[in-house]
Length: 388
Length: 203
Image (cartoon, rainbow over all chains, first blue to last red; front, side):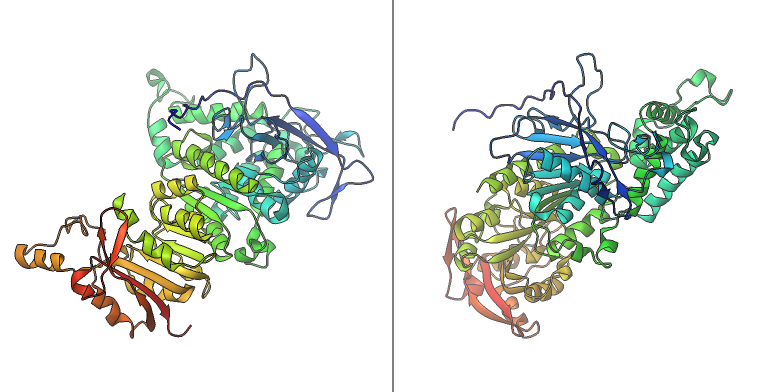
């Protein structure tokens, strides 16, 4: 072919609509890892692209701690901000909606349409609050599996996500090896480091210590905004690298004329964090933050398999693309290398690259040419292999 | 690009259908792709550069980014039918360690490298009195990735110490573009490249 390859058009996935799937109605609740039962369960989900005739082009996107089902596109014409992974999902993008059918659902325990602590407990008619059972990454995956069954998809071309999304993707390949052709795990880990758990705990303590939290019973009074926004501020520090923070803010003042005169935010980095905190409390539930960070902390594939990560990946059949970022200190390179090691010792197919960037953990959400190229090429070759 | 193709024809000819192969220093994945297409090989690659891994992904070749010396100890004994060290052994920090590990994890190993005993290389050093810079070794001493250069004879001499036997030797020179001419007479002097298929004596 002499035709010049068409320059991919990076456009939007367009208007997407949140849909809801309710299952596990009584008397068939979902049995959770803790042994407790939950039902009925609703999952909020969105799709873009078209499912092909063989249903062989479905990709499940898994979101991170603060994400939701709205991964790409816009909710309305007037909507100003696109979905959380719009950089990578859309026509001609890494997850090309012209080629793949993209599904993303809000996790259980979440607060963006799926059943979580803010949902009404059918037994009491009031929000669950702390009566909501503990959920694990594995429980989130089991709920998503019901959704995939409901959509009539027997095998996913790929499960993909960054951070906690990557944990879910890994869990998918272990829990349902026959249902996944491939897995894309970005800036993720088979277990969170002690440092990561420590920082999550500081975030939770910020919420617990907000008097408005009231042991989780705040839905009918005022919300623990101070605690949740502080938790978010701490989170944001962990998502950035020292270098990225320096480049983005340096020691620049927000308003140099008033610097040092009172306790208002002075440095740009302070206003940035406060802004992130304030923005977050408008859309996120404090109890969900507690439940989901707990799920992240407890995720441990090694512990699930008698202390051996190699044993965890023994029976998987997916092909993997694992990517880490050089300046990510929350989910450092070593965490990804451990996963890769376990996979290759088992003779599994794995691609791994450590992308050089200053953007820290946040890198998976920001535009990165190499990340885009690797995802795109990996999916392309996995689709081709799956069709043989 | 030409450097990457060195010895590909000989490697492909050596490896039987359907083998499990580990290619150490697989570059852009071309050799593994050819092995898959022509011999239905299950191939795995190790490559140090981000760029190389990315090109492998594009070709559908599975490859992880690491130093060659890194992580070989993780593999179980005889995990692979063949381990390939094609124009790589002279780049490793610890060739002794790499050779021992390669013999342990592979049933057989293919080791091919630029032969420092080649007469033109010898003559270069002899007459110029400086480190040879030629088609085989296109670097100055200070920017060369070739930190452990060796001759065909060196490889033969290490066999008893490293407990390997030499299954075959196909030392060669490259003429034209993609063809390797096997040099069987005085290869340590006349062949540009050494090419060995070796196996551990214990296995």
